[in-house]
Image 1 (cartoon, rainbow, N blue to C red):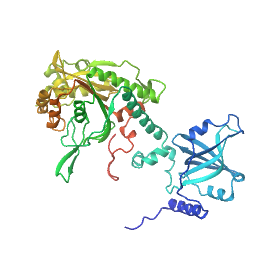
Image 2: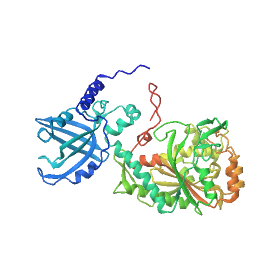
Image 3: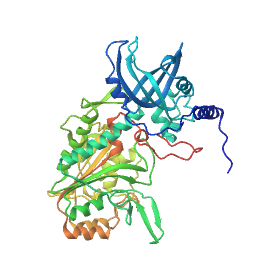
Image 4: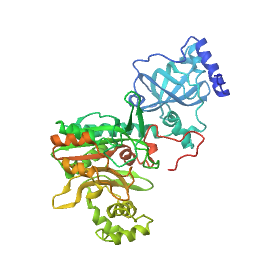
Length: 493
């Protein structure tokens, strides 16, 4: 394979790299001990202009540079913030001054110097020693402070994190949110576990799986579409409060709220029910809000907000259908009439499947929330315990915020005989991937050992981060979202 010829920008940077080497410095850098975060350095700056402050050691990437007479100004940033550097020829050796002349935007450097405020009040570091930590050979994007090519940035996420304002901070908030979720569960004595990604049966959810093949065993396997069935096995085994945060894979469409691989958390609590899970869900989300914000009211879109302060509303599924679809959910003909108004197929489709599509078409957009939608038709919830006084209703809730489903929870079905029967029940009008009629014999065996009554909960972590960071596309909160190969039309938002 022939070597790719560098473009003129890269060629110029390679010349500077060679200059660094000729001066006796390493252009790729070495260990740089003792440096402090830029945000911490800024707190040590003197209050008065012109007054010398602390000696500091910092490191970061060059984001801006400019000249003013014999002075050279550079802005560098790390993952905590930015700071101005001031190079004065009188403060540096000849070799150091020449080294400074090899610097480009994007280079990583280490600095030893003295904190000072300039006459304009700008916190700066007056450089005493420069260390090159990595020469960047890539030219930054044009006008990098307002890069508009979203596809470019998503394909080259490194550039997005460096040059798009707010992206790094948003993704670090993602880590804070996930850590908060774990802390809330630790405080309530839940155990975190890891379960298999490769499944023999694509169960625990209604979704089309990705299929792979194990060569040695010569068997077809599925990338997991849910965490549920293995976590329930662990409850049978005696882990009474259990959860997993993991990647889940669904071979389905891509849009503003869906990515084929995504992060979710599933949680199971023995001797609880779906009301237990409502309380837990509210605690998880409100604790996460408190971790990243001083207020429970967060911005959403243009001029809107989401108030996460509790207690959150609870509304019954059938009541919402009556309110927003304008029909009696117990009257299949009336529901079918509304369905036809929305282009929903009704012929040879189970009435509860039609009802659920009507719910999605007429109700979800009104669920600005946070609101728990409770008590779903039992026929569409095959892993859920029925209400004792009404076996047609399942003890299930979904949490909606701004019309987006954020969480799904059940009072878990622990009757192995009924579960086995429901695994074999395919509702008319449902395709195979939309059905949960997938027999998992090993799971039934585990249920026959005896699973305690329990509440179970699933939360989409990516959607939670979207809502808490005012992000309107799931691609904005996943480090590396799935994209079409370059050259193909981009996917819709």
